[in-house]
Image 1: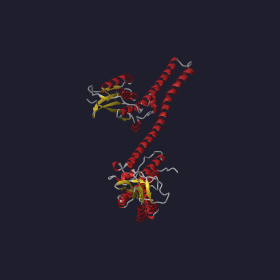
Image 2: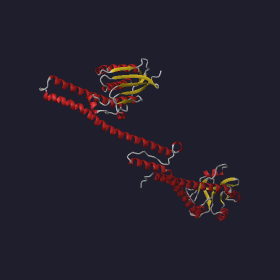
Image 3: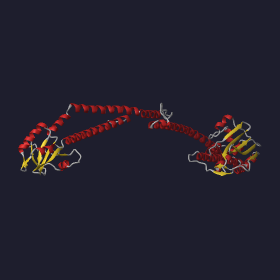
Length: 493
């Protein structure tokens, strides 16, 4: 069965870790205990072979003194049955031993450990061959055997013989060892249980985050996650930091979804408005052209000319609307940015006023420019600011009465240069002002159609000033005119 939960995986990892650690510890403990016992045993019996070889004549005429050896074997087996004696020649060949036939499996003993044991200063334990168990090595005591002051062989005493092995096996099955084994198992299981409980408690916040994120998903990202009882800022640990990050991330996601929903609503409204505003001139133009096609023989030249002129006017209006839509789409693109530079706002304002000289003359408007010639330069995108001025002045001309007045004023204010476009037109009602800069918003639909307004000019001006880090504002009274104004930062000297 595959473990799915984090707590289960941590518990499994802890179980494996405790098991491996306990096994390794037991193995090291057993090995180190055995080595310690062997070291103590060898140190205590280091001079045993030397005393025996010194006090008892083990050789006679170069051969084993069987009578002395039999007596020695008998005595030592009574005193210490765990040791085994072997008489070796100078090359390690076994000359004599006390064991039933077939018990001793080796004919000779490796002398390298014997030489190492006899050399003073070497670390103990030193283990050598066990003649009764080939492949096994045990601690021993050894001493050279002399005859007539000549080296004739070695006395080799295995300190842990077969009887000792049997006793060790018995001890391994003892009650004390079994008790210690079960105590060790109990301690390991208790440690595992405590570890599982501790990890379960430590991971409770991770489970809370997972539960809250799941609830956040099920709520369709409408409300941000709020973690209750969470430690904030620098006082918490990594999980607290992750939780606060999840909180902030959920708020960003909620905001983005709200923006997407609002963008979808705006998109639907935009499509509806575009469809309506494009359909109106197209329908009118089609009507005039169909009339010309059907009744061209019945219409006079002046009437035909009038229909053609009206069709051209609707075509121009359609072209202006498409141009404004394209420009607004470009301005609202995330990649859109103002190309900032320093320029003279006074010169730009005069140039824009001159562009509308013909239109202002047709309405007999009194145009005034209150622009000091020594006005400082400003920082902005000259092409975009020119577009703002054009849109504001064109709107002022459209909605001004015949013989009205229009003024363009530029003056320093609070470290910036303020621009005002003032007219004496029909004005704007207070309830219409909050929506004035939305796309396609028209105060009066019939008036907009009559004056061929796209409803995008103020939206374009508003977006341009947003790209400059500013805003456009308006003050107006119905029947008395309007004042649109904005500010640009003065160029630093």
